[in-house]
Image (tube, one colour):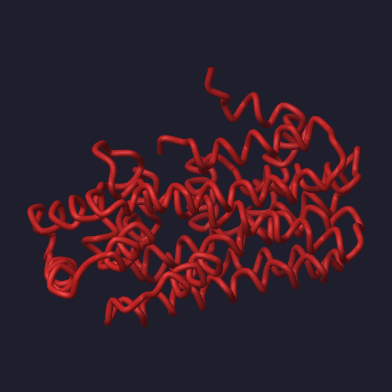
Length: 326
Protein backbone atom coordinates (compact mmCIF):
# COMPACT_ATOMS: atom_id res chain seq x y z
CA UNK A 1 0.00 0.00 0.00
CA UNK A 2 1.34 3.40 -0.98
CA UNK A 3 1.73 5.94 1.78
CA UNK A 4 -0.04 9.21 0.97
CA UNK A 5 0.99 12.69 2.05
CA UNK A 6 -2.13 12.94 4.21
CA UNK A 7 -1.04 9.86 6.17
CA UNK A 8 2.53 11.15 6.46
CA UNK A 9 1.55 14.57 7.83
CA UNK A 10 -0.93 13.21 10.40
CA UNK A 11 1.31 14.16 13.40
CA UNK A 12 1.37 17.78 12.20
CA UNK A 13 -2.08 18.02 10.57
CA UNK A 14 -3.32 20.61 13.09
CA UNK A 15 -0.16 22.70 12.69
CA UNK A 16 -0.39 22.59 8.89
CA UNK A 17 -3.99 23.79 9.00
CA UNK A 18 -3.02 26.62 11.35
CA UNK A 19 -0.10 27.46 9.06
CA UNK A 20 -2.50 27.85 6.12
CA UNK A 21 -4.26 30.75 7.84
CA UNK A 22 -1.04 32.36 9.07
CA UNK A 23 0.61 32.13 5.65
CA UNK A 24 -2.39 33.66 3.87
CA UNK A 25 -2.37 36.51 6.37
CA UNK A 26 1.36 37.09 5.81
CA UNK A 27 0.74 37.65 2.08
CA UNK A 28 -2.11 40.15 2.33
CA UNK A 29 -1.82 43.61 0.78
CA UNK A 30 -3.96 46.76 0.68
CA UNK A 31 -3.26 47.05 -3.07
CA UNK A 32 -6.13 45.25 -4.81
CA UNK A 33 -4.05 44.06 -7.78
CA UNK A 34 -1.37 42.68 -5.48
CA UNK A 35 -3.95 41.00 -3.25
CA UNK A 36 -5.54 39.39 -6.32
CA UNK A 37 -2.17 37.99 -7.41
CA UNK A 38 -1.39 36.76 -3.88
CA UNK A 39 -4.70 34.87 -3.79
CA UNK A 40 -3.88 33.33 -7.17
CA UNK A 41 -0.49 32.15 -5.88
CA UNK A 42 -1.89 30.71 -2.63
CA UNK A 43 -4.66 28.77 -4.40
CA UNK A 44 -2.11 27.11 -6.68
CA UNK A 45 0.32 26.04 -4.00
CA UNK A 46 2.03 22.67 -4.33
CA UNK A 47 2.27 19.78 -1.87
CA UNK A 48 3.77 22.06 0.83
CA UNK A 49 6.68 19.72 1.40
CA UNK A 50 8.85 22.56 2.75
CA UNK A 51 6.59 23.56 5.68
CA UNK A 52 6.26 19.86 6.50
CA UNK A 53 10.04 19.56 6.87
CA UNK A 54 10.05 22.66 9.12
CA UNK A 55 7.33 21.32 11.44
CA UNK A 56 8.62 17.75 11.58
CA UNK A 57 12.17 18.87 12.34
CA UNK A 58 10.90 21.20 15.08
CA UNK A 59 9.03 18.24 16.59
CA UNK A 60 12.00 15.86 16.56
CA UNK A 61 14.22 18.60 18.01
CA UNK A 62 12.24 18.49 21.23
CA UNK A 63 9.16 20.71 20.79
CA UNK A 64 5.87 18.99 21.63
CA UNK A 65 3.96 22.24 21.20
CA UNK A 66 5.39 24.30 18.36
CA UNK A 67 6.25 27.93 19.19
CA UNK A 68 5.13 30.84 17.00
CA UNK A 69 8.70 31.11 15.72
CA UNK A 70 8.26 27.77 13.93
CA UNK A 71 5.21 29.05 12.04
CA UNK A 72 7.05 32.25 11.16
CA UNK A 73 10.05 30.23 9.99
CA UNK A 74 7.86 28.13 7.69
CA UNK A 75 6.17 31.28 6.34
CA UNK A 76 9.56 32.93 5.79
CA UNK A 77 10.78 29.99 3.71
CA UNK A 78 7.57 29.88 1.67
CA UNK A 79 7.63 33.64 1.02
CA UNK A 80 11.27 33.74 -0.07
CA UNK A 81 11.00 30.53 -2.08
CA UNK A 82 7.84 31.73 -3.84
CA UNK A 83 9.65 34.98 -4.68
CA UNK A 84 12.46 33.02 -6.35
CA UNK A 85 9.95 30.92 -8.33
CA UNK A 86 8.14 34.03 -9.63
CA UNK A 87 11.47 35.54 -10.68
CA UNK A 88 12.60 32.20 -12.20
CA UNK A 89 9.55 32.12 -14.47
CA UNK A 90 10.48 35.58 -15.76
CA UNK A 91 14.11 34.58 -16.35
CA UNK A 92 13.11 31.30 -18.03
CA UNK A 93 10.30 32.97 -20.01
CA UNK A 94 8.03 30.22 -18.67
CA UNK A 95 4.28 30.58 -19.05
CA UNK A 96 3.36 27.69 -16.76
CA UNK A 97 4.01 26.68 -13.16
CA UNK A 98 2.60 23.27 -12.08
CA UNK A 99 0.30 23.19 -15.14
CA UNK A 100 -1.17 26.62 -14.26
CA UNK A 101 -0.38 29.92 -15.89
CA UNK A 102 2.62 31.63 -14.28
CA UNK A 103 2.34 35.13 -12.82
CA UNK A 104 4.32 36.62 -15.72
CA UNK A 105 2.04 34.89 -18.25
CA UNK A 106 -1.06 36.50 -16.75
CA UNK A 107 0.27 39.88 -15.59
CA UNK A 108 3.48 40.33 -17.68
CA UNK A 109 7.12 40.48 -16.60
CA UNK A 110 7.18 43.90 -14.97
CA UNK A 111 4.41 43.03 -12.52
CA UNK A 112 5.89 39.56 -11.89
CA UNK A 113 9.27 41.05 -10.92
CA UNK A 114 7.55 43.50 -8.56
CA UNK A 115 5.48 40.68 -7.04
CA UNK A 116 8.66 38.70 -6.39
CA UNK A 117 10.21 41.77 -4.74
CA UNK A 118 7.08 42.19 -2.61
CA UNK A 119 7.20 38.57 -1.41
CA UNK A 120 10.88 38.97 -0.58
CA UNK A 121 10.22 42.10 1.46
CA UNK A 122 7.30 40.46 3.31
CA UNK A 123 9.58 37.62 4.36
CA UNK A 124 12.31 39.98 5.53
CA UNK A 125 9.88 42.12 7.50
CA UNK A 126 8.20 39.10 9.08
CA UNK A 127 11.57 38.07 10.53
CA UNK A 128 12.82 41.51 11.48
CA UNK A 129 9.60 42.55 13.22
CA UNK A 130 9.83 39.46 15.43
CA UNK A 131 13.62 39.50 15.93
CA UNK A 132 13.99 36.12 14.20
CA UNK A 133 17.53 36.96 13.17
CA UNK A 134 18.84 33.37 13.29
CA UNK A 135 16.00 32.13 11.07
CA UNK A 136 16.53 34.99 8.62
CA UNK A 137 20.26 34.22 8.46
CA UNK A 138 19.59 30.53 7.67
CA UNK A 139 17.08 31.26 4.90
CA UNK A 140 19.08 34.15 3.41
CA UNK A 141 22.08 31.83 3.08
CA UNK A 142 19.87 29.34 1.24
CA UNK A 143 18.66 31.99 -1.23
CA UNK A 144 22.27 33.06 -1.85
CA UNK A 145 23.32 29.46 -2.49
CA UNK A 146 20.33 28.90 -4.75
CA UNK A 147 21.34 31.88 -6.89
CA UNK A 148 24.98 30.79 -6.99
CA UNK A 149 23.95 27.28 -8.02
CA UNK A 150 21.81 28.59 -10.87
CA UNK A 151 24.64 30.79 -12.13
CA UNK A 152 27.19 27.96 -11.85
CA UNK A 153 24.89 25.74 -13.91
CA UNK A 154 24.46 28.43 -16.57
CA UNK A 155 28.22 28.98 -16.71
CA UNK A 156 28.96 25.27 -17.14
CA UNK A 157 26.07 24.63 -19.54
CA UNK A 158 27.75 26.77 -22.19
CA UNK A 159 30.60 24.28 -22.50
CA UNK A 160 28.86 21.12 -21.29
CA UNK A 161 31.93 20.33 -19.18
CA UNK A 162 30.17 19.50 -15.92
CA UNK A 163 31.95 16.80 -13.92
CA UNK A 164 30.21 14.71 -11.29
CA UNK A 165 31.74 16.83 -8.52
CA UNK A 166 30.48 20.04 -10.11
CA UNK A 167 27.04 18.49 -10.65
CA UNK A 168 26.73 17.64 -6.95
CA UNK A 169 27.85 21.14 -5.99
CA UNK A 170 25.19 22.63 -8.29
CA UNK A 171 22.33 20.54 -6.90
CA UNK A 172 23.56 21.01 -3.33
CA UNK A 173 23.18 24.75 -3.86
CA UNK A 174 20.15 24.80 -6.17
CA UNK A 175 17.87 22.28 -4.48
CA UNK A 176 19.37 20.80 -1.33
CA UNK A 177 20.14 24.16 0.31
CA UNK A 178 16.43 24.95 0.53
CA UNK A 179 15.43 21.62 2.14
CA UNK A 180 18.47 21.98 4.42
CA UNK A 181 17.29 25.45 5.48
CA UNK A 182 13.79 24.08 6.22
CA UNK A 183 15.25 21.55 8.64
CA UNK A 184 17.71 24.02 10.19
CA UNK A 185 14.89 26.56 10.66
CA UNK A 186 12.68 23.90 12.27
CA UNK A 187 15.38 23.05 14.81
CA UNK A 188 16.47 26.67 15.40
CA UNK A 189 12.88 27.86 15.94
CA UNK A 190 12.61 25.63 19.02
CA UNK A 191 15.80 27.00 20.60
CA UNK A 192 17.87 23.90 19.80
CA UNK A 193 21.65 24.06 20.27
CA UNK A 194 24.03 24.64 17.36
CA UNK A 195 24.99 20.96 17.10
CA UNK A 196 21.34 19.92 16.70
CA UNK A 197 20.68 22.68 14.16
CA UNK A 198 23.69 21.59 12.08
CA UNK A 199 22.63 17.92 12.28
CA UNK A 200 19.15 18.88 11.09
CA UNK A 201 20.62 21.03 8.29
CA UNK A 202 22.89 18.23 7.07
CA UNK A 203 19.96 15.79 7.18
CA UNK A 204 17.93 18.14 4.97
CA UNK A 205 20.85 18.56 2.57
CA UNK A 206 21.11 14.78 2.04
CA UNK A 207 17.35 14.55 1.44
CA UNK A 208 17.50 17.48 -1.00
CA UNK A 209 20.26 15.87 -3.07
CA UNK A 210 18.33 12.58 -3.26
CA UNK A 211 15.22 14.55 -4.23
CA UNK A 212 17.02 16.30 -7.11
CA UNK A 213 18.51 13.08 -8.47
CA UNK A 214 14.99 11.65 -8.54
CA UNK A 215 13.85 14.73 -10.45
CA UNK A 216 16.67 14.23 -12.95
CA UNK A 217 15.58 10.63 -13.50
CA UNK A 218 12.14 11.82 -14.57
CA UNK A 219 13.78 13.26 -17.70
CA UNK A 220 14.27 9.71 -18.96
CA UNK A 221 10.74 8.44 -18.29
CA UNK A 222 8.15 7.39 -20.82
CA UNK A 223 5.16 9.31 -19.47
CA UNK A 224 4.36 12.90 -18.67
CA UNK A 225 5.13 13.08 -14.94
CA UNK A 226 5.06 16.73 -13.93
CA UNK A 227 7.73 17.81 -16.41
CA UNK A 228 8.07 16.88 -20.09
CA UNK A 229 10.33 13.92 -20.85
CA UNK A 230 13.69 15.06 -22.20
CA UNK A 231 13.26 18.69 -21.12
CA UNK A 232 16.67 18.78 -19.38
CA UNK A 233 18.35 17.54 -22.56
CA UNK A 234 16.45 20.08 -24.66
CA UNK A 235 17.63 22.81 -22.27
CA UNK A 236 21.22 21.48 -22.43
CA UNK A 237 21.30 20.64 -18.71
CA UNK A 238 23.89 18.05 -17.73
CA UNK A 239 22.36 15.75 -15.12
CA UNK A 240 23.87 12.77 -13.30
CA UNK A 241 22.64 9.97 -15.64
CA UNK A 242 24.13 11.75 -18.68
CA UNK A 243 27.36 12.75 -16.91
CA UNK A 244 27.98 9.15 -15.84
CA UNK A 245 27.14 7.75 -19.30
CA UNK A 246 29.56 10.17 -20.97
CA UNK A 247 32.31 9.15 -18.54
CA UNK A 248 31.97 5.55 -19.77
CA UNK A 249 31.93 6.42 -23.49
CA UNK A 250 34.79 6.44 -26.00
CA UNK A 251 35.89 9.74 -27.54
CA UNK A 252 33.87 9.40 -30.74
CA UNK A 253 30.64 8.40 -28.98
CA UNK A 254 31.06 11.19 -26.47
CA UNK A 255 31.54 13.72 -29.25
CA UNK A 256 28.38 12.50 -31.06
CA UNK A 257 26.24 12.63 -27.91
CA UNK A 258 27.46 16.10 -26.94
CA UNK A 259 26.70 17.29 -30.49
CA UNK A 260 23.11 16.01 -30.12
CA UNK A 261 22.74 17.82 -26.78
CA UNK A 262 24.20 21.09 -28.05
CA UNK A 263 22.32 21.06 -31.34
CA UNK A 264 19.08 19.26 -30.55
CA UNK A 265 16.93 22.37 -31.29
CA UNK A 266 14.03 20.48 -29.74
CA UNK A 267 14.31 17.69 -32.33
CA UNK A 268 12.74 14.57 -30.88
CA UNK A 269 15.07 12.19 -32.72
CA UNK A 270 18.22 13.80 -31.27
CA UNK A 271 16.76 14.02 -27.78
CA UNK A 272 15.66 10.37 -27.98
CA UNK A 273 19.13 9.35 -29.18
CA UNK A 274 20.63 10.89 -26.02
CA UNK A 275 18.01 9.18 -23.82
CA UNK A 276 18.72 5.81 -25.46
CA UNK A 277 22.48 6.28 -25.03
CA UNK A 278 22.11 7.06 -21.31
CA UNK A 279 19.88 4.03 -20.70
CA UNK A 280 22.20 1.67 -22.58
CA UNK A 281 25.26 3.01 -20.73
CA UNK A 282 23.85 2.32 -17.25
CA UNK A 283 23.37 6.00 -16.44
CA UNK A 284 19.94 5.49 -14.87
CA UNK A 285 21.04 2.56 -12.69
CA UNK A 286 24.04 4.55 -11.46
CA UNK A 287 21.89 7.58 -10.62
CA UNK A 288 19.44 5.40 -8.70
CA UNK A 289 22.31 3.93 -6.66
CA UNK A 290 23.64 7.39 -5.78
CA UNK A 291 20.13 8.58 -4.88
CA UNK A 292 19.70 5.62 -2.53
CA UNK A 293 23.11 6.33 -0.95
CA UNK A 294 22.05 9.86 -0.07
CA UNK A 295 18.67 8.54 1.17
CA UNK A 296 20.47 6.09 3.48
CA UNK A 297 22.83 8.80 4.77
CA UNK A 298 19.83 11.01 5.53
CA UNK A 299 18.14 8.16 7.42
CA UNK A 300 21.29 7.56 9.49
CA UNK A 301 21.22 11.21 10.57
CA UNK A 302 17.49 11.03 11.24
CA UNK A 303 17.98 8.03 13.56
CA UNK A 304 20.23 10.15 15.80
CA UNK A 305 17.06 11.95 16.92
CA UNK A 306 14.74 10.32 19.51
CA UNK A 307 12.05 7.97 18.19
CA UNK A 308 8.65 9.66 17.84
CA UNK A 309 5.62 9.83 15.52
CA UNK A 310 7.23 12.88 13.87
CA UNK A 311 10.46 10.98 13.20
CA UNK A 312 8.51 8.05 11.75
CA UNK A 313 6.63 10.44 9.44
CA UNK A 314 9.89 12.09 8.37
CA UNK A 315 11.23 8.68 7.39
CA UNK A 316 8.08 8.10 5.33
CA UNK A 317 8.45 11.56 3.78
CA UNK A 318 12.01 10.78 2.68
CA UNK A 319 10.88 7.57 0.99
CA UNK A 320 7.93 9.41 -0.54
CA UNK A 321 10.23 12.00 -2.16
CA UNK A 322 12.34 9.35 -3.93
CA UNK A 323 9.53 6.93 -4.78
CA UNK A 324 7.12 9.55 -6.11
CA UNK A 325 5.90 9.22 -9.67
CA UNK A 326 5.69 12.96 -10.39
